[in-house]
Amino acid sequence: MRLTLSVIKADVGSVGGHTKPSSRMMAAVEGEVAKAICNGLLIDGFVCHTGDDIAIIMTHTRGEGSSEIHQLAWKAFLAATSVARTSGLYGAGQDLLADAPSGNIRGAGPGVAELSFDHSLSGPRPAESFMVFAADKCGPGAYNLPLYLAFADPMYCAGLMLPPMIKGFRFHVIDMDHTAGDSVIELDAPEDNYHIAALLRDNERFGIDRIVSQTYGEVAAAVSAQRLHAIAGKYTGKDDPVAIIRNQGIFPAPEEIISPFAKAHFVGGDARGSHVMPLMPVPLNTPVTGMYCLPIVSCAGFSVDKDGRFSESYTDFFDNPAWDEVRRRAQRKAIEMRSQGWSGAAMLPYSELEYGGFRDTVSALVKRFRLREERKPEAAE
Ligand code: 13P
Ligand code: 13P
Ligand code: MG
Ligand code: MG
Ligand code: MG
Ligand code: MG
Image (cartoon, rainbow, N blue to C red; front, side, top):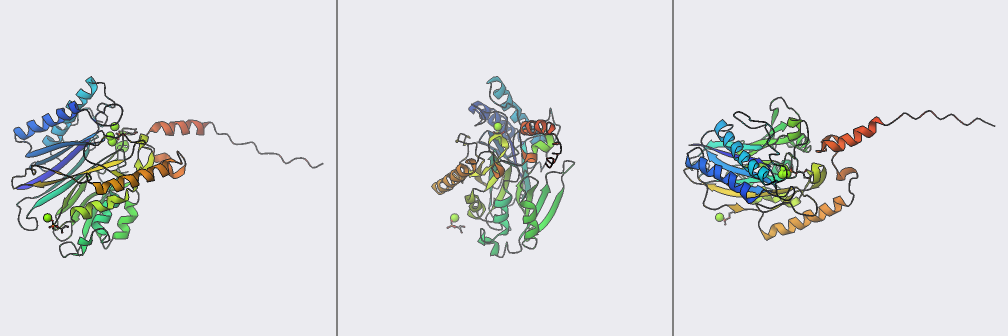
């Protein structure tokens, strides 16, 4: 069977400010997903949230970019939006940028990550397991560094030295500033590692779109790297990404994929999408309620049975005392960075400030600048 994993995530409203969706919103999305499983559109589905972003994780056989699957997600987000509106929640429908997109909703606001494979539970994949990363309050390139380290650096993934992975992985890197269609370059790790790093260092412009095994041609990872404000032309919330990563066997093991997140590396995001703050790994369904508005990321793990259904339970990777240490570290880094407030590296540069209002404030001041009249030298006595 050709199986597709689709993860579609959107921020369509939250309780008490931008913290989390309400339980009625979650129930509205779950209801649409349950109907789609019942009528055979989906094989399986799972709904969770990270901060105030709701993610729908699905298996089906309609392929990537299927209009039926995308429309189902859109309908589910509309149902949650309507709950958010009637309950007076903050930011109702925020990420639904188009009025009624027909077909594929990529580019209409929600984050979309999808990948497909032949699912037979034989050959190089006698078992199928994967992880879903979902972030809130951060920029689209938030996974650039951790995924590079997991798929291209044996200091983080010693498994790269094993025969199934030693030829390396092909990185598809997308130029997110290119708005007329997807502009992608394919670079092979480890040969092109320095070229890959030269692009991925810029989290706001370049993002990993997918990663493919060079030995097996199997897709290892798919990421929703896109810029909402490039699409909408104005502030619309952060482009916090989702990613699907297949693990074990011919791919890195879970611990090799999540260990780079122990860095709590600095990314663009946080309050008003305009600061530079550490990415904190959190359990599923964590609200954003810290003393700042820290970028957060969750990670859910699933196995898939022969019919494409999820295992009866899931793994919440960041819900473990080991990650308490990292969370404390992230908080310490956050306090350090915020101690310098708006100054220099603590906030994003002018062009990346998510709230256009910051730019309006500066532009209005720039208009008031005047060339100083040349000072005359004082007449010599
Ligand atoms: P176990 O097979 O003992 O669960 O561990 C497998 C492993 O190699 C971890 O990467
Ligand atoms: P989200 O819209 O991504 O939830 O975050 C908005 C924001 O700017 C936080 O201040
Ligand atoms: Mg929000
Ligand atoms: Mg959000
Ligand atoms: Mg968001
Ligand atoms: Mg085991």
